[in-house]
Length: 439
Image 1 (spheres, rainbow, N blue to C red):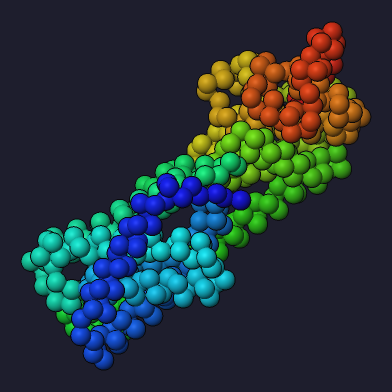
Image 2 (cartoon, one colour; image 1 turned 90 degrees about the vertical axis):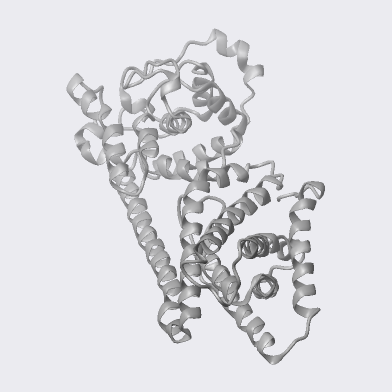
């Protein structure tokens, strides 16, 4: 559950309340006629439609992020009807949209600032620079038009960051996710704002162009939705690929699923952001894809691997990394998978020092080793869970990243301090040099 400190959010909501009050004074305080009512009603419908044209991102935008056409439509309405009618229309549309989705109380009020403050700030700047809504003339109005569109995009993203920073959550720091996404989100919102401004100019120059240019927003939405669907298909294919690798023999059945579950528990315990947790989900789920290049005779060999076989097995992290890089994963994610067999003391497969290994790779290493030790393999029976936990405890700071291992042991309710004396007297179990014992 998210708790929001009231004092930290006073300024945030005060901006929205002030904008709304000024909008009411300007719109309702003056003489009203049928035309103004129609403009307000049309603006409300447009902004509501923009909010409804929403695409939920399936990956890489943690915390349930989504993209709507609000920026396009809000800037369009701003330049067509003016600042304060647009603010009032935005507030009405926001309330109607949230109520229709079952959002009431604090959630309903909490969404208002991000939906009306950017309109108000951009509109005020537009007028200060000499712009007049409903009568834009180019090229003389280029400066106020472009400045207002850029301001809308910047204020919009700052509102999201402020909203996230003023939300106190013990399980995650969502504001860090917003900061990570800021460059990409700012580019997208800026593009949408400029499209809205361009559509407004065309519609004001010749109203008959509206039926032709307004569908531009719809085409942007369809492009986002299509891209989202392609990503869904890709993700399902990768999940299937990971399952095929696990199902090649009964010893590794659902191995990646279990490693993923353990890794996410460690990540949450280490206070990773939602964005980092999502990346950790995919890298842990797909870390063994490279085993498709390893012959079953090696994977299922009951005895010790010879040197040649050992080298083949050692190559699977690199193959996994190349497969991920060929899909929509960035190089960092590929590097996580490439390094998931590195040791904290630098004696892993690639011999990298700890500072050159991504933290997520060390997290996967702990989860991977535990599941390997507690699973039946063709060359040995599964170790008891207690013994596997003791092995991880003995590897703190040598084989395993100390923080990642401690968080996992705490999650498994293994008391390190209580078992410290007994562990000091016991030798590490001789696993041999077979890579499969930690894979």
